[in-house]
Length: 146
Image 1 (spheres, rainbow, N blue to C red):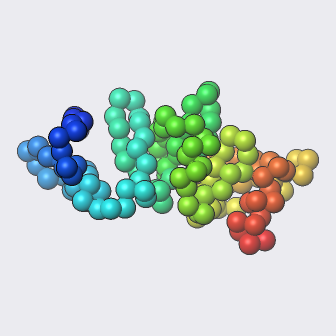
Image 2: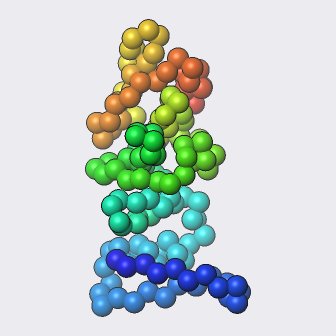
């Protein structure tokens, strides 16, 4: 889908016009998102040259890899331009930092197990795995009420 953005100081209230030859699920979803006031429950991400809007409950993990913040959903990975600390500031209590480079969605955890040198190992429901560092372990346990 092609997206055009026009910024004008003459407009009192933002509005969107959608031009399409067919009402697809994506168009309906875009309309729903634009009409709702729940934009804080969404995050804009990139996959190649495409831009997508993900609902926060679709996100499994944010992780820094190769100096880029990657966003992982159930079956896909995306990029986000914000640094991890800025992403963290906007997240709900469903998300917790588990290392210097990773934030996970607590609702997407499959299992947690002991790992090497006092660290813990985490596996998400989509198969992603990571280590919980000792520094962030107390915060992680508190988030799980352990």
